[in-house]
Length: 195
Image 1 (cartoon, rainbow, N blue to C red):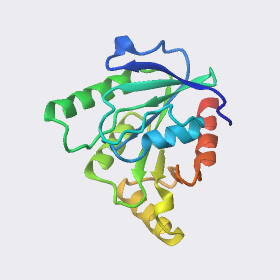
Image 2: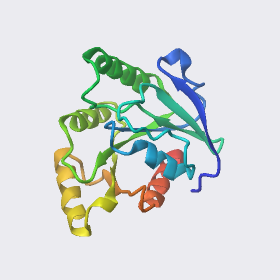
Image 3: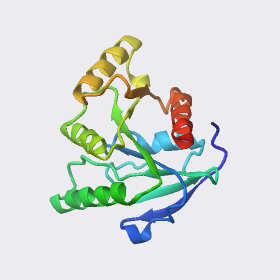
Image 4: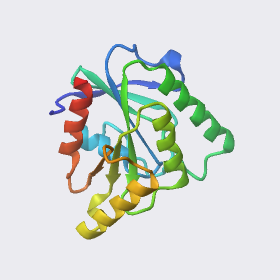
């Protein structure tokens, strides 16, 4: 699949602001500084579609991007940023739950983790959350250029174990900097859209 057209469709904090539920959606979730915006820009081949922020935890909204006029990529707000107040963290949970429960077109949530680190307690919690809603199954390991091949294999095994992934669950190492791994991810997304 090639993404030839992508644009910001809607920015929402509550269901009444969501765009019409008329097409498939693939959402992306991850910690605040995991490199989600860079990945979305790489996938869509647009330098500034998703804003890459110098201060992590900036995205407090659900951003819907219309892609190829055929489906949406949904950028979920980053979690796990220390400076967020307790009420902001609770709002985040409620916002996610509402989105997961209400969207008929939501095919899958792709979870991002940093390949260099063991998934945090919040990463584990997020993946359990996705499993609960039947939206699990795909994990992208970002910043793959920062580790050697050997380290990557070792860290992926650790990530699989920490998130309690099954053999069927896909783990895709990606580097936005080196522009690697994203073709496999696009193929996976194409498969989701055909289901």
